[in-house]
Image 1 (cartoon, protein in one colour):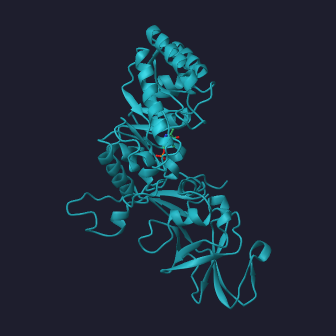
Image 2: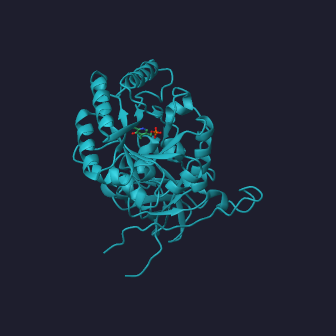
Image 3: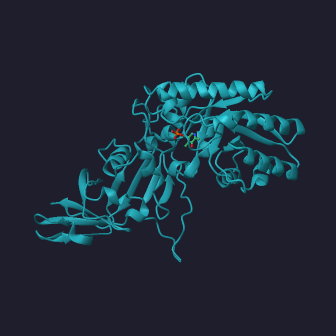
Amino acid sequence: MSMQSPVSELLVHGDAIRDNTARFLALTQGRIMAVLKADAFGHGSIAHSVLDAGASSIGVTSIAEALRLRAEGITAPILSWLNPPDADFAAAVRERIDLAVPSLELLHAIARAARDVGAPAHVHLYVDVGTGRDGCPTQLWSALCALAREHERAGTLRVVGVMGHLSCADDPGNPQNTRERMCFENAVRSARRRELAPETLHLAATAATLTGVGAGLGTHRIGAGLFGIDPSHTTQLLRPALTLATSVVSAREVAAGTGVGYGHEFVAPERTHLALLPLGYGDGLPRAASGRAEVFARGRRRPLVGRFSMDMVVVDTGDDALEPGESVTVFGPGDAGEPTVAEWAAWSNTIEHEIVTRVGCRVARVHRSLDAERGPGSAGPGAPPRSRVILSPTPSPE
Ligand SMILES: *Cc1c(COP(=O)(O)O)cnc(C)c1O
């Protein structure tokens, strides 16, 4: 098998992520848990850079994600908050991974694993302040705290944190925010009455931090914001951190009346040039954006035409005949005029989170600084060279 350079690349701009991290450090008096679930919202291995940039801990959903970070050499505290009762809690305790506890059942399972391993589990009790989704329902909270205290006395675990998650933080005027904040504060008081001494309290995520809904509430769990996504749409301060680029596979000139793709949803109204791109919904381009989305090729926006296929889409380049191998930008920060992730989200009737997390495994992740790309001087005088290109291993075709 020969080594080929990848046709499509997801460029991950570490400098943008570092700048975003710095913004959140400033907003939170330095207390950030970087949320790197779902492969860091699709951005790949960036844990070391967010920690270098000042994040103090990492949050993920599954224990598997946390173990992968440990295997990458991450020694900072890691919290895993979404686990079924038969998850590998023993591995988590052995690897010093903190665990969120939303139920008595999970508390039992974690305490059992800690006894087996012979080391105390570090847990964050997780109260449902109003999502109706995850976390401990408030009517069971006091029982959860009492049982956690018993286990603390027995030495099987330590309650190091209390957490909650807001349901409407992207809507700062929503009265639900105040109710949920009060609910969280009550839960913390109730835990303290049970003689628990959690040192880390965390309720706010990106939206609550940007809008101030989560002000003054200890540690902030920041995910989307690190990657330039503001769910509250209240700020322009963040830098998008991804560019999705591909290369033209082939190009052709077609006559007026030529139908393109499945179902001929597009029929060329006049003579035009089409270029074929090797990316489709199997690589994360939402099929729902068919007939609406654009890409950036040879200095201009160009419409994608026809229905998106699993592996390919077609771009209408009008009078311009693109060359096979020519580079095309699907989305990027928008500085050169290319479409942004936000535009792709709008074309697909979804949110930016879904666009960045769905880029498929056929697309190689390449870590490349934007500032370095823009040439000398852009990173400021005396700045260290920031271009670091690492090709992450992508599954090779058998
Ligand atoms: C995903 C998630 C976060 C991060 O939210 P953002 O809005 O992306 O910052 C925080 N807490 C929990 C429980 C989450 O599931």
